[in-house]
Image (cartoon, rainbow, N blue to C red):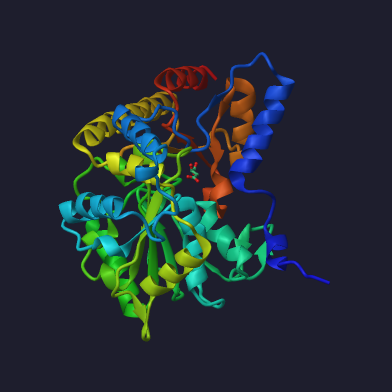
Length: 404
Ligand code: MLT
């Protein structure tokens, strides 16, 4: 008789965005005449830019000829892509990261869920609250989070670092010492950022207590202010305490294409073991590499044409962010985010909790957002809207919200 991994049974409900998807589908089925606008899940809406399409076509043609056909990709990614990443995302920003410290994958979501496999079962994790649910859920599945209290929505063995209005939605160093610290900046869901000096404090702290930081920089392309770091490796000492996760989903519209990467510096060691070797072993065993075609598309992100076209695309979404933020402020909402991130974080009005406001907005404005409480207990009373909709839908959504 087999036994199941009972840790899965501890997970409350379904994954946040599956839950929302089901609710919206039910509403649409009951109200087929309503034009529902989604500013919920952070999924992009604009087409891939011409430089990427051209690279995709070229790579598809190569796959159709015996002399340029590609089978399994190298475990850790093609050199052409790893070199382009090292050069553009790191060297150009003064960060010392070599191409062979970059592990190409099919996206940051999988990497952020899988990375916990490198740590012992008793490792204590610390997360921002609210937080991208994958960090916590993947640790629940691994049996690392203790018991769940449905009344407080808190796991007994997780260290929560509340990110609230009072601390500018930036976490403070925790009282209990964690082993693994998850940080995401620009932040999902709050859209907040921290300065390079603040991030340096985290790096110094992690090195001091022997913790590791998992730094999710999936939204770095949206940074508009100069004192906000694009990579944790801009900080001194990060090579001995930090893993960085990156995605092509938000900067290049790859949510349906799938490409990301994880950086593990070779100095990141525990005892005599380098985490780089562990992740390489894991990658080699469990993963067959992102497709050649997609890695060529990723390379095009760093071409001159690709960079110019993507700058425009990011600008398009950030214009939506501005429209949402200003519109909400004009309507009397208390709002943050939206300056260095494609997410706008608002306080729910009229004492509604996050899910009540979700239902209210869906029913009365036919607009979908994401309830803050879905990201953790400190998200209660907040709500997230994304700037990834089309310009037209964003304008229409705001018109509807303002007329409520
Ligand atoms: C979000 O809406 O938080 C993200 O799009 C989800 C994701 O990137 O997996």
